[in-house]
Amino acid sequence: MMTVKGNQVDIAESARIDPGADICASHIIIGENVIIGKGFIAKVAGRLEIGTASVIKNTQIFCRNAAIGSNNYIDGVLIEGASNSHSQNIRIGNENLILQNTRINCNDDVEIGNDVGIGQYVDIWTHGSFMDVFAGYPYTSGPVKIGDHVWITAHSTIMPGVTVGDHVIIGNNTIANRNVPGGCFFAGMPGKVVKENIYPPKFSNEQKEELLDALILDYMEIVKGKGFKPAIQRKGLDIHYTSPDGGELVFHSETKTIEGIPDIYSEDFRDYLRFRAVKFFTDKPFSSIIPSDFKALDEME
Image (cartoon, rainbow, N blue to C red; front, side):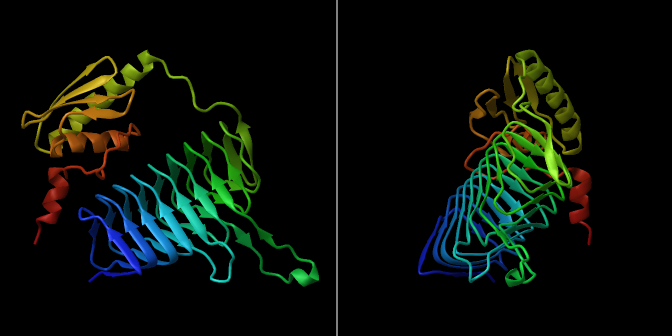
């Protein structure tokens, strides 16, 4: 069974909370088409808010206030703040990915922007101390802010008080113990700017067309193992998709919008594009059709 306790509770009818979830907060707001999966535990003293079409599972949140935006995917993450801290607030924007065994310490405020990818085994710290400060040993504390369009790769650490700018990639096993300027590739132990002012790169229409052609060709090979065959054609930077049931959609790559009524087949294509880092967000979580060889495993007795 699942448990939801709060003084004020506002959960959209289309939201799904799976058995085993345990949610307790003074004020709970869960938006449309949110999926709260197994292993989700939230103990939030103030306000817990989760936006449209976010998916959160195997995650624990212990803090004062937590605001999580729309179209996020969070799996296997620990978010925690000490009860005797003055802050303990976390704000996560929209369209982010935070993966397994990441730990976010929010003894002080943590703010994560939009379009942020955080890989496995990443640590974000706002507080650090152990040895006696009265004897002269250091005490470190400070909020962490991560900008928009940032990729923090696996096994990296963000230290207290650090701000990461927009359009940044942080390399594997990096320790960011100072502010990271926007537009750079940052890596090392301790981290340093390896290349500056390189993001976002310029991408010509010809390069975009070549990329879309390669994606379509690859996807048509993948669906052979899924038991259906759509018709897909690129026209300029738009992808025209006709599903096996005859539904027609247009994926407008420049605006990242979709024209038409999605079905399970076009949603499979949308999820494939997400996997290939071409993201079309809607008001629903991504979903895909299981290949026949994997589906056979589920049918075994």
